[in-house]
Image (cartoon, rainbow, N blue to C red):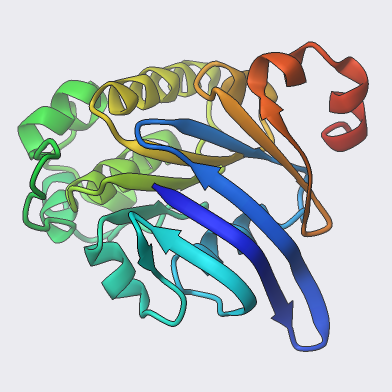
Length: 233
């Protein structure tokens, strides 16, 4: 579904991603784990066309994404939930959802406010409240739900659990499970191993812009030395 090959990204003279290979299969949840500054957000922003790769390939559903504008990448069926929860603060929850609406795609579930309220019951209770007057956890849910209104085939999630209460993180876990059941592919950039381990089958570990380890989540969880080397401060 999503394939990166030999991806390099530079900020001026600084190399921030080096020879990155990564794959996300149909209906698969893949975790991209790493410390702050490891390159997780840079990788997601590059896939979405917000940053430009200096070398390598980015393919989604068999189509080359390199050089395309972000809005075209979004319309191709790739959704993106940024780390900074960019809700429209003056629009209500319901109006935020309408702002993300795109036509349904053949062979994929159609996301409607009604279906999303079933997955995010908190949002149903505050559908008439402005986005700037809801909690951080509710804003995170709203950002994800608005992305789903675009009826994507795959979603990039950037640190969705950051700063959230354990109760809200538990809801996020159930939400990602529901998306997987609907056949969506998910690339999850995270530092929270406990959260990622509950939803992802495969792991890529990134450090200083390089993929240093790739394998099954079960293997990563079984190796404390590996976790200490790449995740612990």
